[in-house]
Image 1 (cartoon, one colour):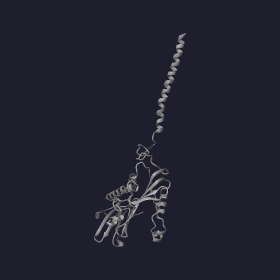
Image 2 (tube, helix red, strand yellow):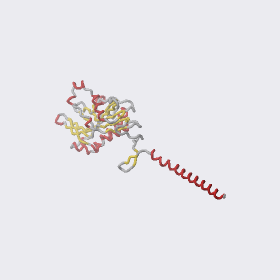
Image 3 (cartoon, rainbow, N blue to C red):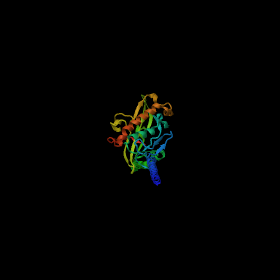
Image 4 (cartoon, rainbow, N blue to C red):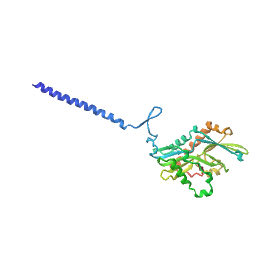
Length: 304
């Protein structure tokens, strides 16, 4: 009669063993099933590689509508001016040449991004020229200057340009304007100047940018300055010392001036010269305006 009892006891032990094994299997599988829920989101790029959608700082890249520390708007446009000035109005010529292949907007954003303190979130805001109407020169009279509020106008333009975003500050990089010596002529943005004078001609390549930083709530201008390479003297002092242009420029050989204005777009020497001056001036001026070094002087060069 002992055999049936032993058989029953063995059956109970066997069942307990099976239950234990099954429970152990489920306990080892649970962590593996939960792991994908904590993985970083991924975005499949055009090249087929999978990457996490993050900036170089390690913070998630901000998107339009979300809050960010800095919004960057590059409004210089992709254009290069080929200009000649002389003693008579018949010598004065100006042609604006499209230069989309020079990558100036990307360069400006990259240098601005590099100047912003590490860890800050940055949103690049597309440039819509329609939101920055050209200045109406017919209204630039002494009477109009008495009633106009330029800062309010600039705040209105910027508020419209960044609509739909929410950043603590906005940085605008635009073209600067400078007189040519003591003459009534001016140069603007990126270009090459042929100054045809009595004793010959002189050729100058220029890269004039202007920086404005706006408060993201009130759109008041916090700081602004021309992008400069020589920070030892104000533009007024530089002009007194004989500088021809208020901002980065360099003299070139006479043969550097393009025979046809449109040839400038395919000239690598002109492209590289502009890019070098632009990058150096932004790298020196932006940290000052962002408070990473002592504040820069207010510039007396115009901007547009």
